[in-house]
Image 1 (cartoon, one colour):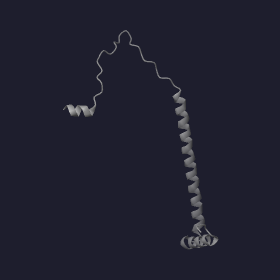
Image 2 (tube, one colour):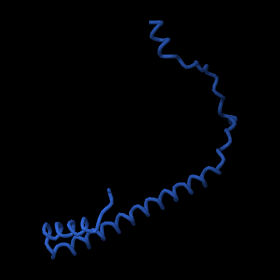
Image 3 (tube, helix red, strand yellow):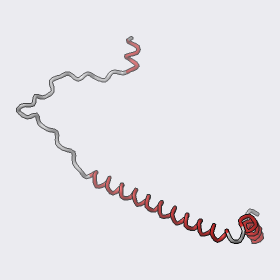
Image 4 (tube, helix red, strand yellow):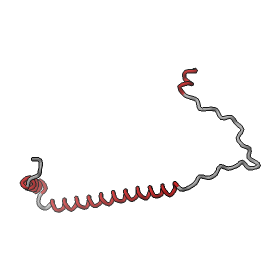
Length: 95
């Protein structure tokens, strides 16, 4: 019931010819084909870029971080106190 029948296609072709004219239809089809080719090429390049980024991320995952530096003879280790983080809700309740 919802399938396209041959007479549906014929009516569609007649309407397109009446709207655009017989001279403009080949140009329109050609332009549509070029546009589809450009879109296909761009989506393929985006997919390739994603694969390249994924391979670079995998390669960088193998790097090891630098070991922590030991204080030299001139450097003194940090002697200050580190305060625990303050909960903003608790700070508002205290005030």
